[in-house]
Amino acid sequence: MRRLLRFAPAVLVATLALLGPWLAPHPIDEPVTAPYAEPGGGALLGGDVLGFDVTSRLLAGGRELLLTALVIAVVVTGLAALIGTVAALRPALGRIIERVADTVMMLPTVLALLLVVLAYRGDSRGALIVAAVVVGLPYAVRVVAAAAAPVAASGFVEAAAAGGERLWWLACREVLPNLRATMLAVFGLRFIEAVYVVSVAAFLQIGPQPPAANWALMVRENGPGILLNPWAVIAPSLAIAALAITVSLATDALAVATRRQAVVPR
Image 1 (spheres, rainbow, N blue to C red):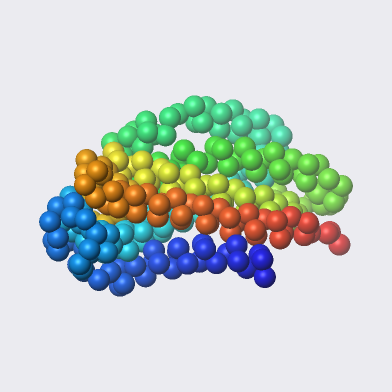
Image 2: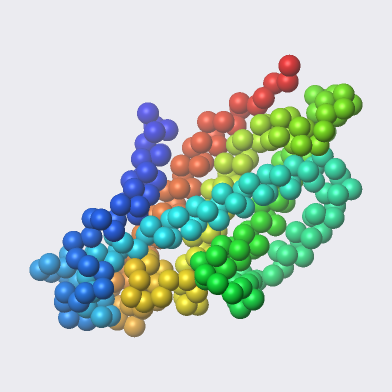
């Protein structure tokens, strides 16, 4: 029961983010108050810089952030699982992978965003996902490779390798099933990192543009009027923090539940 309670906040925040556009009481691009109006009347959290309803934009602004961060976390975790496991099973190749990862890790996040977006022609959301994967993958590979190394050196993996099993079999059937807790932890960390990267991108005007509703974009747009209507900045900031924290707690609970469930070879 206590474990289920740790999932409840993440489910609630994710559900509100996904269904929020249909729950918004007002259109997100129609003024309903004066700019930076205080809460009251038909605007529970007041108005923003253009007089749009903060509550409506808050409800509608989380879906794209959630889905983009989820795609980034899933891609990074999946690639890291394969690359890190191969690095552990093939130490010579692993040393090369680790050196490449160390080199990419020195690239600042903001610089990586700008480089990828400037070189990418097309949808800025696709460029943002590519940049976030490039930035987050080296860290995840390092974690997975370190966790997979003792498993790869265990007797049942060596016996399978001596029996002629191929690399993909060793990685997918012998090593990765024993890293479920690690992969859940990696996913949680990469999701938080993805939320951070997507939020930073909004401040750099990469991704959604006004009048689109986006939590990070709301913080950037309404910053100058924080003394007039603080909720226009505080509410989306709290929403971003709640999304990252609740998902992290949920993945931690899953990791604890699976930590001792190692696969026993036949």
